[in-house]
Amino acid sequence: MAGTRRDEILQIAATLFARRGYHGVSVAELGKACGMSGPALYKHFASKEAMLAEMLVGTSDELLRGGRSRTRDAKTPEEALGHLVDWHVDFALRHRALIVVQDRDWSSLPDDAREQVRSLQRKYVELWARQLRTSRPALKPVEARARVHAAFGLLNSTPHSALLPDSAMRSTLRDMALRALGVA
Amino acid sequence: MAGTRRDEILQIAATLFARRGYHGVSVAELGKACGMSGPALYKHFASKEAMLAEMLVGTSDELLRGGRSRTRDAKTPEEALGHLVDWHVDFALRHRALIVVQDRDWSSLPDDAREQVRSLQRKYVELWARQLRTSRPALKPVEARARVHAAFGLLNSTPHSALLPDSAMRSTLRDMALRALGVA
DNA sequence: CGCTCAGGTTAGCGATCATTAACCTCGCGG
DNA sequence: CCGCGAGGTTAATGATCGCTAACCTGAGCG
Image (cartoon, rainbow over the protein chains, first blue to last red):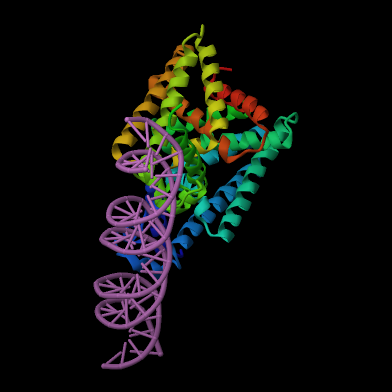
C-alpha cells in the first residue's frame, strides 16, 4: 500500500481547508496539524496547490469510478439512480470535508488540475443524466443535467448540517433526492 | 435614497468574492474593479471584514424578512411553502453572487457578525420548518430542519449551474424543492 | 563500519496582504 | 471668497504568506 503518509496529510488538509478555506489555511498551520512544522510538507508535495490538486482530482475520480461500477449491473434506470444516490450519499457522509472543499475551492486549482476536475465532474453528471433521461424520456438533455446538478446541491448540503445521525440522514437524503429527480 | 455608492461597491465585491473567494480577492483589486484604487475603499468601509459583514448580514436579513412577509397571508402550509420556495428561488436567481458568498465565506466573518448571520439563518430555517411540520405532522422537528437544510442546498446550487434560462430554472427548482420536501 | 537518502529542522527571502499616513482637490454653505 | 469636509491619491508599514536553502539525523544496507 503506497503513500499512506501522503494520504494522511491530505485528509488533515481537507478538514482544515473545509473549515476555513484553502486560502485561509497557511502552510505553517497545516504542517503543525500534521505533527511537523511548516516546510516539511514540501518533502511530500511540490506545493500547496499540488496538495489541493491531488485532493480534488482524487475525489472527482473516485466519485466517477464508484458511480460507474454501481450502475453497471442495474436492470432498470430507476434501480441505477437508486444506487447512484446511495453511493453519493455514502461518499458525502464519509468524506464531508472533501465535499466541502470540492465545491468551495475548485477555483483555486492550477489550470490543468481544474480542467481535469471539470472533465471528471462532467462525466459524472452525464452518468446520472443518462439514467435520468432513460427513466423520464420527456426530459430534454439540458433539463436532465440541470436536475442532476440540483440533486448534487441537495446531497452535498449534508456536511453543513449534521443534524441527524448518519443512518437517519442517509435515508432522508435518499428519499429527498429521488423525489426531487422525480423517480419516486 | 441612502448609501447608493456603498451598495454599488458591495455588489461588485460580491461578484468578486463569489468568483475567487473572500481571501482570494485583494483590497487593491477590489478597488480597481470599483473604479478607484486600493485604500480609497476605506472612505466607505472600516475594513474588508466589515464589507463582508454588511453583505452577509444584509442578505440573511432580507431573506428572513421576505420569507416572513410571504407566509403571512397563506391559507394552508402547502401554500406557504410554495411561496417560500418561490421567494427563495427568485432571490437566488437575482443575487447569485450573494448566495455563493453566503455559504462559502461566512466562516471568514468577525465573531459578532457571524453570530448575527447564524441567528438570522436559524430563524429563517425555523420559518420553513414550522410550515413543513404543519403540513406533515409526522415529521419530528429535527427531521423537518434537516429537510429544510437539504432543500436550501438544492435551491442554492442554482448559481453553480446556469444551464437553463431563468424562467425554466425557476419552475424546475420549484418542482424539485416541493417534491423533495414531500409537499407535492 | 560507513554511505546514502528519506524526512525532518530553522533561518531567511521576496512577494503580497490589509491597513495607515500624509497629502491633494474639488463642491458648496455662510 | 473662503474654509472645510467628502472622497480621492500615492507611499509606506508591519505582518504574513508560500517557498527555498542549508543543515541535521537516523534507519537500512553492502
